[in-house]
Length: 191
Image (cartoon, rainbow, N blue to C red):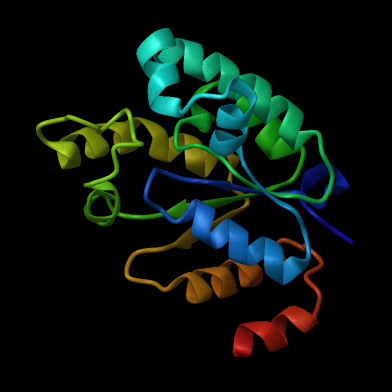
């Protein structure tokens, strides 16, 4: 079973908030018969508090340190689909393990699509309470988009696409990278 570099079967979803990483990741994991893990949910499970509270008490730097530790541990597993937080690519050590321990898939989306998806989500500390969320999202994307592209072996656009269609394009991209996707996935995708 081929995977990304290093022979790992791991699939890591990267991209901005609102790009569909969790929804796509869950469906992709089901399709491939692999466990799905969300790094943000894992951080919340470990700390017993939600991410906005971590940001409130420890600041972004404190959260990023927790995220780094979680990403290091989660990417060391074998055969998982991992949805990362939108800022996971900020730290060079995260980018390194995402490239080396699996196949990273960048779910690319427009700022307009992001804004529409996250506008009422208080669980997003970097845009919660911001007067102009679209401007903040554009600022984040200007810095992060090159980092997503740097780690990604596959890039899939998600704007105006249903989850099933995005998963189909992810599977095509994985196959193009030599990832051994079972042919049974085609029957499921065709439904």
